[in-house]
Length: 154
Image (cartoon, rainbow, N blue to C red; front, top):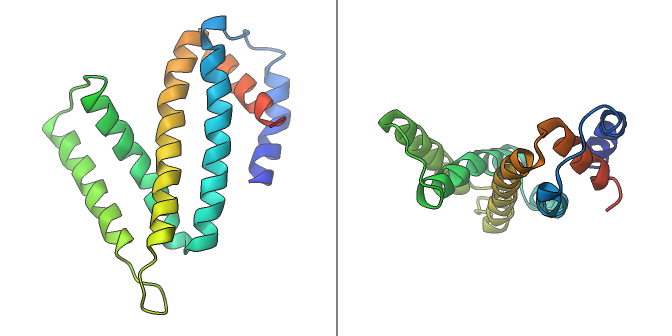
């Protein structure tokens, strides 16, 4: 996580000199996004401590788009085609199957699954939040550059 955060730092700091400053309407979302990204990183680290990468990563990354889709359907009023709904159902069934995997000791690992799902919730939250924040900022590049730069100081 340190390498990821520090790896993007030079580009983010350089970018803030060349991109528009985010509109004040986005500042609250920008600050909240920094916090949610921190929780994402901490939950992913915990998930990797508890479980195997081959189980944790697909659950974390696969659950996020499914969560975003469900929120979009039920809270934002987005309509999906039949094929899109089938695709989301397939993703969810794959995640369900991964959550049932057993470790080498023959036991399931519900703590790793829970940590991976928490990570997926964080990813979904910052994805939705950053979408709204970038729109409110009036500059997606400015928003992400400032979010990445501020993340260095948390």
